[in-house]
Structure formats: structure tokens, C-alpha cells
Image 1 (cartoon, rainbow, N blue to C red):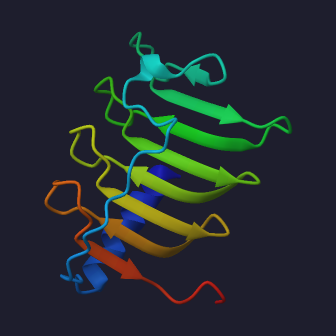
Image 2 (image 1 turned 180 degrees about the vertical axis):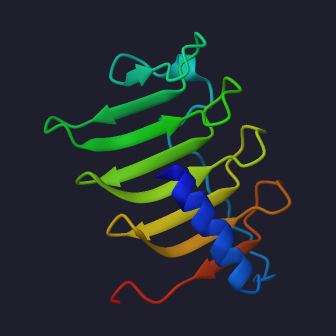
Length: 140
């Protein structure tokens, strides 16, 4: 699903003019987010998807088995680069490190797990959001 979201993100970006307005706010990492796969403890289910000896997938679930959070190392560089946030097993937000610097630089906000309501990007990789696109309203 992450690859689909990234492809959708790139396609949408090509269709809409970028908003060059400066956004001084920063988005801190959640307390559980770590780029180092060794930091994911016993409450996480982990997997080495490509059998290279390094964890590249971690998920934590609630007592119903619903996903709460996921972290993935898509480029297999040894660091998590995609983070997913769920509510009632429905994807709410994705955060991505697009340039492997261990800093989030893309935030994608979803409604009903599939509809992108907004995305933000740190284009200059300085920790400050400098591009934001909003689609429709929450009531759509």
C-alpha cells in the first residue's frame, strides 16, 4: 500500500501547482518512531522480509489484532523509512523519509484509509514543512 500512496503522491504533485507558502511548523516524531530497527521491542511483531539479517518490518496491534502502528524499511538500508498510523485498523497517516537521512520529510493524511485529505513536504530537508496541499474538506 505504501508504494501505491507514494505513486499517488507523485502523480497528484504533477497535476497541481506547488504551494510555495512557508509553513514554519515542524512535525516531531511520535514517541514510538525509531529509524533503528533494533529499537522495536517485545510489543512489536518484526520481520526480515528479504532475509538479509536485518529487521525491515515492524507492526504493533491492539488486543483485537487491529494494526496500531507500522514501520518499514523499504530501501533496505537498515533504517525504517515509512511509518503508518492506524485507528480502528484504518490507515490515518503515513510519514516517509524520502531521502534516507533519517528525518521525515513527507506527511500524508488520509480519510477512511484511502482518500488523501492533505499532504505536506519538507522540500529543503531542514525539518520545516514548506509545501502543503489540501484536498476538499473533512465532510466530503
